[in-house]
Length: 230
Image 1: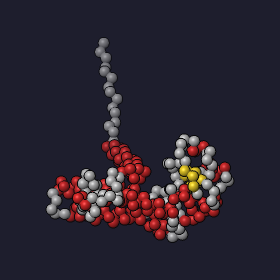
Image 2: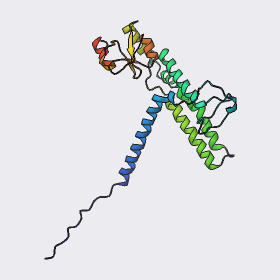
Image 3: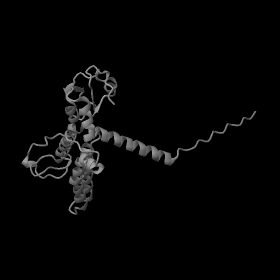
Image 4: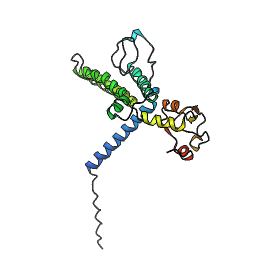
């Protein structure tokens, strides 16, 4: 008896377009997570003291050691940008701008990003237009400068801005009442025994204004429900 061999079921090859979309999705997801990590841990990314002077390292170009180079006093430029952006964001929370003027509010909260762009974009342009550098050196220096720009820009962006109206409403609702906040997070609490604080071994106690200055810009949902604060 002669048996016919079963023909294999044809399978459709994966679409190159779908693979391309998946690749882009993975890349931008990884990029977004990297930006979030940079924003959260930017102070830890400073291997140099932004105030320490070392004249032997003055005016160095971008390198693997100093990603954004150094100033005339030998201070690491990227460390100064990152720490400066943190101080700017803290100042915005101490004396926030009003949302009555959207343009001023945006500029006030993103001045660190603007300064970072003003500082690094000319550096990138100088690298690209420098005829004394060979192509390989120019490419490396440009990539390093762009990475420094991205790190500085992301760490300078305020992902949790607060307006003068929001701060005024919080102070009016709680007055001088003590509030509590954990080492991490964006909220403050009116109850020390709040369930959201169960995992925190260390708590900071202060006023609402102090909590907002520490980047805890809103009241915990459970505390607000318990105190009937809307």
